[in-house]
Amino acid sequence: GENVEQHPSTLSVQEGDSAVIKCTYSDSASNYFPWYKQELGKGPQLIIDIRSNVGEKKDQRIAVTLNKTAKHFSLHITETQPEDSAVYFCAASKGDSSYKLIFGSGTRLLVRP
Amino acid sequence: GAVVSQHPSRVICKSGTSVKIECRSLDFQATTMFWYRQFPKQSLMLMATSNEGSKATYEQGVEKDKFLINHASLTLSTLTVTSAHPEDSSFYICSAQRTGVVKLFFGSGTQLSVL
Image (cartoon, rainbow over all chains, first blue to last red; front, side, top):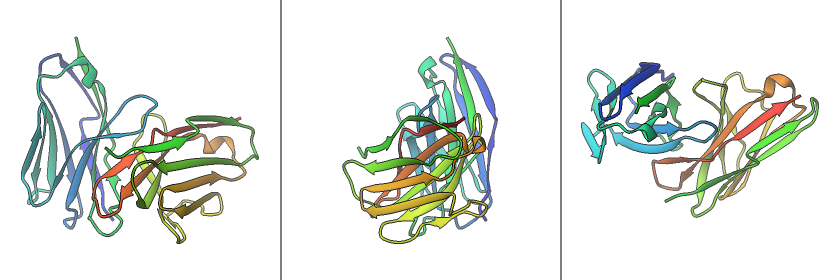
């Protein structure tokens, strides 16, 4: 089955710096890759997603890149702010009729003021 | 945006009792809902896929008689933890797939503590 690996497990950056989180997936049939932000005691919130027919997608300070050949995708957050501090999860789906998501292990991002 | 409501947000129960968690899609119809379990500082583990009007599909290792799932309508799925034990204590999260849309939207989660 699909396996998603995520690195790093923790990331500490200075406010204003950029943060990059990387994921790899095992199933070449995966074609949908969302990123979620989870704050303590809350459910995950979708922040950006990308499909396999696109190499890059950007939404203000957040961008996601996808390398289908290498089966890598990454989340880039620029001009980080303290409120960006949270746990970030990548996920992958084969996009079949149920769009079942397999999650990475999560990255705890701390943005230091 | 799509809103998924999950209740209760927190429940404490005695060992041996059953607990029901509700997941509702408030402003859209959800053909499919998913139930996840999350232990502290760990990732979300898929427990089961719930399709409206049919039996849920459980992931390997998840006891279907322990975790009863009902998806009776396009806006409501319930998870019942039967005869709960302390090891069932966890954060349970549902998500809903809007019919015809790829994106999944998550509920706010339920923290279950079994004493």
